[in-house]
Image (spheres, rainbow, N blue to C red):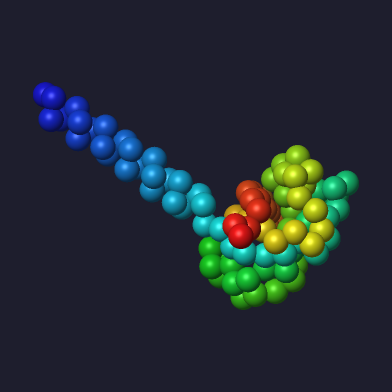
Length: 98
Ligand SMILES: [Cu+2]
């Protein structure tokens, strides 16, 4: 019984890590423009593998306008994007590590 329990826990922990790994599919980019009112952000991004997109400059919608408060134009970032209701949307932004 004890073995079964620890196996179950390991599976839960592994699943949690795997989930994080998938969610944290970050792409590097530089913020060109922020449109806080329109909840839009223009990013010069590197190849975006999760969306099968080459490097380019483009406008994304943002899932949460609060994430735009934490960044500024010219910032080097890493971000995660997804297609939400047909719109290319930034779901996560973090500063690029030094
Ligand atoms: Cu693009």
